[in-house]
Image (cartoon, rainbow, N blue to C red; front, side, top):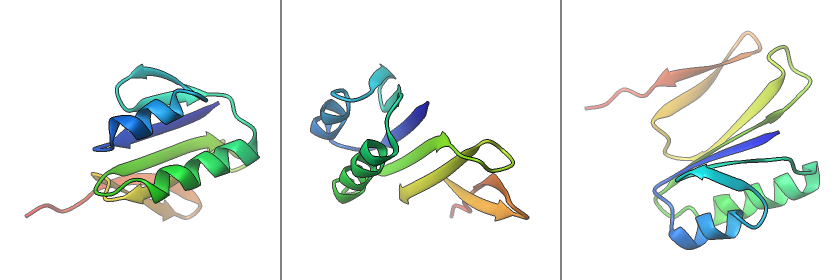
Length: 93
């Protein structure tokens, strides 16, 4: 299962992802993809973010059972804490 969360992106980018993934809520995409298709879609998303942000969650052989990738300025920062991925709120001013 692959999960993509997009924030502040164009409707055309969201529309493009609906060719491959189900969008149960605005900006939330889920589905099953091969690693090759997942990586190509992620590359496409990253290249078309402009001022938006994206998070990719997918299965992995890690302790948690999944891996995370982020692109753009997300509201939370993903940090590695001794092999575990944790979400940290960014400091705001």
